[in-house]
Length: 296
Image 1 (tube, one colour):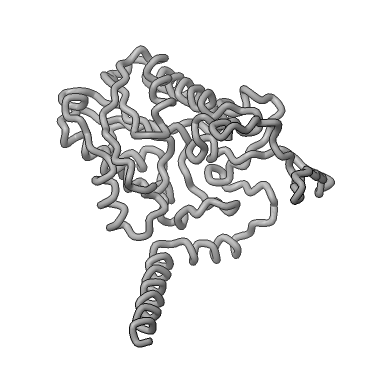
Image 2: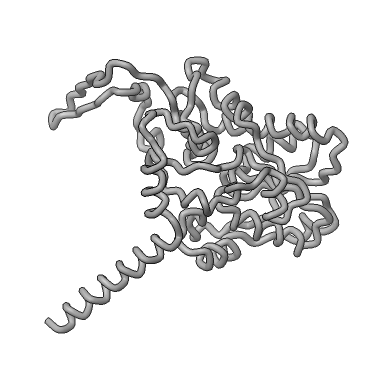
């Protein structure tokens, strides 16, 4: 908005409605009696632009703090670590990886060149399409990996398709060891408030421990951010935020009206088979419409 010359005034409050009439007059009304500020935690990790300010929280600075928290966890778990270089997986994790490297006093390097014309892979239907897209999306620089112990840093892991291929790329480039850090905790539960995430059974974290996830993606060490550290990274700047929607991490849905039946119906719509069937149906409809046009 500031790029377009707008000035940020304030955030819309929970339960508040805003109406702007044809004359440009602004009308506001509080439409709920009991409200609480519970912003989406995943938005700060992954979805938001780093230059955004959400609920008075600077997203860029929140991601910097996520990197500091990751560094502190490394120091707790492996104070004598052997990491030679920290490499971000473009683009969202770059801020966290840089701060992590700084606080560990480890070299930071850009090891992957990103093709900006490939979309986000975790929402793509079909495993084959996702695998092809990952390899076209990122190209490794061999000199940054060869003979080194590499810590790869990503903002989060959803399906794990990208992570597994990236770990293999690092090995193919000659890395001695490949560690993997996620600025967010394991994603184990579906989002029901507007993010079209995959079926939970398709998450890499489904029925796996953190060590088992590391094994599944081929990493020598898997490091996840603790949920409490992630929450602190965001709320530190705004003491008024005491609760988050952390449902993708902990399965707690803030509206209190999500049951197993609802999640089962959602799962049936979001799994790969359902999306492929929907895509096939859409192509059939397009072909039918095209044939109808030609006949006419």
